[in-house]
Image (tube, rainbow, N blue to C red):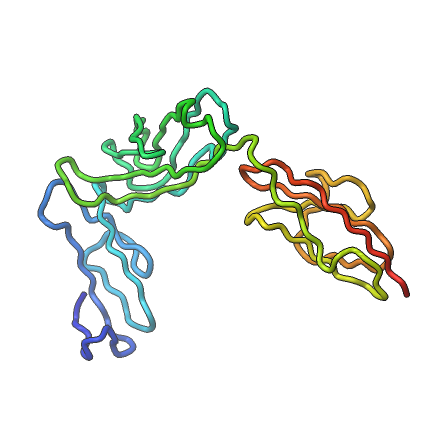
Length: 242
């Protein structure tokens, strides 16, 4: 980056034009893949005017664009499946991409610079749980770090039930309207509830904000979460006296 900070601490006068340059060290196969964050594109040098805090990343890859893994499809499959082909979508893919899952490199089908495919075997899908799928790039003959991107793959199945929802305030008799909150101990859980005493299903209302209870009624709720069975049902009867 030039010019150097006049105070030696990374601060510049407002309006200062900064120039950023990037090139790969000598070695086998690395390329400058482009800028991200407050600079974009692949021009080097590239300029940026200092008018606030800035963040500039120079990306290197074995292709002329940053390596990213933005999505996988499918993201979830039920435990016990025979096998599944997973499509990986991102940027900066190359025929030499490596893909790993559960600490094993997999056979990769290179489709194009934004699409790869791998096959997960029955052994990968036997047990409910989650694992990361990594895409890695590094040149042949390189012994340093790779560049990589990753996404989470979920094997769903008959695991433990999700936590039973909790009501606050608790069931009981109150002298005025109550705004009832429903919570669940498992992050990412979805809570379904009813206010007419019927059994909640996935077609019932999803809890998002406190429920006003202004007359006597019974709330029923249960929860679902990725990798868990449906929770036990919770019931709370509120008697409102006026």
